[in-house]
Length: 153
Image 1 (cartoon, rainbow, N blue to C red):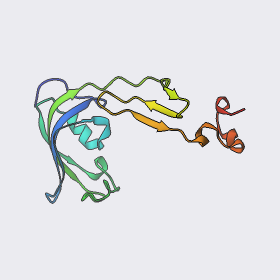
Image 2 (image 1 turned 180 degrees about the vertical axis):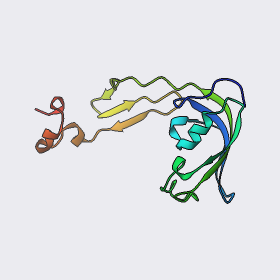
Image 3 (image 1 turned 120 degrees about the horizontal axis):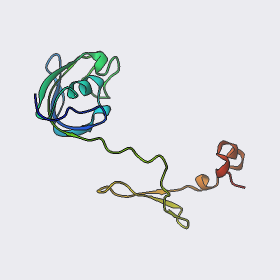
Protein backbone atom coordinates (compact mmCIF):
# COMPACT_ATOMS: atom_id res chain seq x y z
CA UNK A 1 0.00 0.00 0.00
CA UNK A 2 1.03 3.60 -0.52
CA UNK A 3 3.46 5.22 -2.92
CA UNK A 4 7.06 6.33 -2.68
CA UNK A 5 10.08 5.07 -0.78
CA UNK A 6 9.87 2.98 2.36
CA UNK A 7 11.53 4.60 5.37
CA UNK A 8 14.92 3.49 6.63
CA UNK A 9 15.80 2.92 10.27
CA UNK A 10 17.42 6.38 10.48
CA UNK A 11 14.54 8.33 8.88
CA UNK A 12 11.89 10.43 10.58
CA UNK A 13 8.26 9.61 9.83
CA UNK A 14 4.89 11.33 10.17
CA UNK A 15 2.16 8.90 11.24
CA UNK A 16 -1.33 8.68 12.67
CA UNK A 17 -1.64 5.78 15.10
CA UNK A 18 -3.72 4.21 17.82
CA UNK A 19 -2.21 1.77 20.30
CA UNK A 20 -4.31 -0.72 22.25
CA UNK A 21 -3.84 -3.75 24.45
CA UNK A 22 -5.30 -7.17 23.58
CA UNK A 23 -8.38 -6.33 25.69
CA UNK A 24 -9.04 -3.20 23.58
CA UNK A 25 -7.93 -0.58 26.13
CA UNK A 26 -6.24 2.34 24.38
CA UNK A 27 -2.87 3.33 25.83
CA UNK A 28 -1.74 5.90 23.26
CA UNK A 29 -2.84 7.66 20.07
CA UNK A 30 -1.56 10.46 17.89
CA UNK A 31 -2.50 12.24 14.69
CA UNK A 32 0.22 13.30 12.26
CA UNK A 33 2.95 12.78 14.84
CA UNK A 34 6.59 13.01 13.72
CA UNK A 35 9.36 10.92 15.27
CA UNK A 36 12.59 9.11 14.44
CA UNK A 37 12.15 5.41 13.74
CA UNK A 38 15.20 4.55 15.81
CA UNK A 39 13.47 6.02 18.91
CA UNK A 40 10.46 3.67 19.15
CA UNK A 41 9.98 0.04 20.18
CA UNK A 42 11.54 -2.38 17.66
CA UNK A 43 8.30 -3.95 16.41
CA UNK A 44 6.70 -0.57 15.68
CA UNK A 45 9.76 0.58 13.73
CA UNK A 46 9.92 -2.72 11.81
CA UNK A 47 6.25 -2.48 10.86
CA UNK A 48 6.52 1.16 9.72
CA UNK A 49 9.55 0.30 7.57
CA UNK A 50 7.32 -2.07 5.56
CA UNK A 51 4.95 0.76 4.56
CA UNK A 52 5.13 3.45 1.90
CA UNK A 53 3.62 6.93 2.42
CA UNK A 54 -0.18 6.58 2.34
CA UNK A 55 0.02 2.97 3.53
CA UNK A 56 -1.95 1.65 6.50
CA UNK A 57 -1.44 -1.43 8.66
CA UNK A 58 -2.42 -3.10 11.91
CA UNK A 59 0.71 -4.17 13.79
CA UNK A 60 0.57 -6.91 16.42
CA UNK A 61 3.67 -6.65 18.61
CA UNK A 62 4.55 -9.50 20.94
CA UNK A 63 6.22 -8.38 24.16
CA UNK A 64 9.75 -9.13 22.89
CA UNK A 65 9.24 -6.58 20.06
CA UNK A 66 7.58 -4.05 22.39
CA UNK A 67 8.58 -3.38 26.01
CA UNK A 68 9.47 -6.97 26.92
CA UNK A 69 9.35 -7.71 30.63
CA UNK A 70 9.81 -4.06 31.60
CA UNK A 71 7.03 -1.63 32.42
CA UNK A 72 6.49 0.87 29.58
CA UNK A 73 6.64 4.00 31.77
CA UNK A 74 5.32 5.03 35.18
CA UNK A 75 1.53 5.31 35.22
CA UNK A 76 1.08 3.40 31.94
CA UNK A 77 -1.53 0.66 31.59
CA UNK A 78 1.05 -1.39 29.63
CA UNK A 79 2.17 -4.18 31.95
CA UNK A 80 5.39 -6.18 31.55
CA UNK A 81 4.93 -8.90 28.94
CA UNK A 82 2.04 -7.13 27.16
CA UNK A 83 1.24 -7.64 23.49
CA UNK A 84 0.54 -4.31 21.78
CA UNK A 85 -1.69 -3.60 18.78
CA UNK A 86 -1.17 -0.50 16.63
CA UNK A 87 -3.39 0.76 13.84
CA UNK A 88 -1.08 3.02 11.87
CA UNK A 89 -1.06 5.19 8.74
CA UNK A 90 2.25 6.42 7.34
CA UNK A 91 1.78 9.94 5.94
CA UNK A 92 5.32 11.05 5.17
CA UNK A 93 8.96 9.97 5.29
CA UNK A 94 11.54 12.64 6.08
CA UNK A 95 15.23 12.03 5.58
CA UNK A 96 17.32 11.69 8.67
CA UNK A 97 19.11 14.89 9.66
CA UNK A 98 22.84 15.03 8.88
CA UNK A 99 25.10 13.70 11.63
CA UNK A 100 26.32 16.18 14.20
CA UNK A 101 29.90 17.42 13.84
CA UNK A 102 32.48 15.40 15.73
CA UNK A 103 33.99 18.46 17.39
CA UNK A 104 32.28 20.73 19.87
CA UNK A 105 31.86 24.39 18.89
CA UNK A 106 33.68 27.08 20.83
CA UNK A 107 31.11 28.54 23.21
CA UNK A 108 30.89 32.25 24.01
CA UNK A 109 31.88 32.83 27.62
CA UNK A 110 31.22 35.95 29.69
CA UNK A 111 34.22 36.06 32.05
CA UNK A 112 32.69 38.59 34.44
CA UNK A 113 29.34 36.84 34.88
CA UNK A 114 30.87 33.37 34.49
CA UNK A 115 28.05 32.36 32.13
CA UNK A 116 28.11 30.16 29.03
CA UNK A 117 25.63 31.09 26.31
CA UNK A 118 24.50 27.94 24.48
CA UNK A 119 22.71 28.43 21.18
CA UNK A 120 19.86 26.03 20.39
CA UNK A 121 18.16 25.21 17.08
CA UNK A 122 16.08 27.90 15.47
CA UNK A 123 12.79 28.48 17.26
CA UNK A 124 14.14 27.46 20.69
CA UNK A 125 15.15 29.80 23.47
CA UNK A 126 18.90 30.07 24.16
CA UNK A 127 20.25 28.42 27.29
CA UNK A 128 22.44 30.26 29.77
CA UNK A 129 24.50 28.12 32.14
CA UNK A 130 25.96 29.78 35.23
CA UNK A 131 29.24 28.20 36.21
CA UNK A 132 29.82 27.66 39.89
CA UNK A 133 33.18 28.66 41.35
CA UNK A 134 33.93 24.98 42.01
CA UNK A 135 33.56 24.27 38.29
CA UNK A 136 36.05 27.02 37.46
CA UNK A 137 38.56 26.20 40.21
CA UNK A 138 38.25 22.57 41.27
CA UNK A 139 39.37 21.54 44.71
CA UNK A 140 43.19 21.17 44.64
CA UNK A 141 43.05 17.65 46.09
CA UNK A 142 40.75 16.49 43.27
CA UNK A 143 42.70 17.92 40.34
CA UNK A 144 44.10 14.48 39.56
CA UNK A 145 40.57 13.60 38.33
CA UNK A 146 40.72 16.27 35.60
CA UNK A 147 42.39 15.92 32.21
CA UNK A 148 45.89 17.42 32.29
CA UNK A 149 44.91 20.48 30.22
CA UNK A 150 42.16 21.41 32.73
CA UNK A 151 44.33 21.35 35.86
CA UNK A 152 44.81 24.63 37.65
CA UNK A 153 48.49 25.38 38.20
